[in-house]
Length: 611
View 1: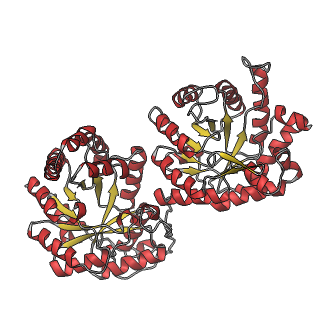
View 2: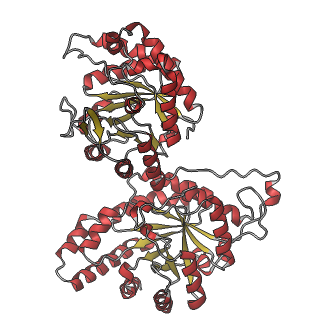
View 3: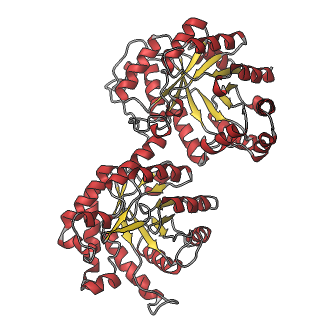
């Protein structure tokens, strides 16, 4: 959703562009030998329809139908004298469809000729062609320029210079790769980043040419050497010739899965090129939402908010756990995963053992790894009643709409549960029911706002609910986030929304954790550090490669690799957990111990390490 300056918005959000214009026009009956750019004048409705389809699919940005609308490409069609008109009309069509809620990117492609030193066209002539196009696009109301599908660094340099001379709109510079991961002229991803940075492109990216896999590898190389926003817009795989038609065989689901990988790899902008359609963009939007749900701010409009709101309960009065945290005591919690069925007997027995050993609270995940398990609030209620130890109930946004969330939270409070950990939730694609629908009306930031309102005695419409809830509001934070700046911005929003403490993902790398702590201290809320006692090499590899943010240092991997027996691996894992706790204990307010494979004895040995 459009919100102010494009580059400023990029700092805290992932932006989704549209898919292929040419593919959609072809699918709607426009022959390949037709000049697609001419349609802006002769058949504007079909261009509008394509834009509308992509916006309805979830695109944040649509590109003008002007990729080849320069004098050198329009000339052979007898349209060389209509460059300004075609570009102006293309921008106006897109602007009218996008309105004020979405961005419009003015699309400028290569000239289709060789410029000096490779050809007879001078740099000055090339720049004038790009300027001619850019002026008309800017007059038509575009928000930014996208220079896309360039193969020659020298040519895109002239395009960057030209659009900079026309105005100050943001510039995206996009090169295309071949199957060997370089441009057709042999430039590497590192060279692309270096040159685009020197030429002051605002966004650096790759599009067209190849499918998602090759682009992901290039993205990972680029992300290591630049802090500029990176954009990735692959083709839907490689085209196959089927009865004279170029068919792209990569599915929308495949592109969606790679969208998640692009984001984790550092991309701030994703989209589709040749072969992608609104179906692909819809799937990619779902993938973005499942990984990084867009922040939706809940606006409460009431006549007399001060009269409706009540003073929230003091933290120390909310629960026994809250009182211990508020007093500065070092707390210990152990994670207990709910059962796959209805039998909670084992979970209760484990909770009883943990209480006997002095654990302060039982941490209960809500459908971790998107697997179907007993609901966290229900198990929390059973354990609290049967054992007398407080649970920390995880509550996710994945499975409920706003109405369901309010209903759940009021009911959970009525059951006597007070300690919450508010998280966005793992997307269904990760679990054993990948076709389940993710809701994600809000993310963890919005959810924190919701609980904070309830703690002040009002619902989302500002209506009084009677006695306020008295939840202890906890949130998750990832010290090893790929984009730590974004992680800290999100944490800042959570704290402003009402977060009272935070729990980290498992900590392995002390250096990464210490760097995180330098920034975390400014928020002045208690922190509980996650500890995962490794049980073997495979477990360490899983944590390092499949749990986002859980970075296992090479020296720890090597220690686990040197173990030769199950017993030795367990002992080494305990030793590593103990060393981690001792290294961070003075800087945190407590620890949360995970229980690999439900082995309570292993968690108790970690507790012994603390004492």
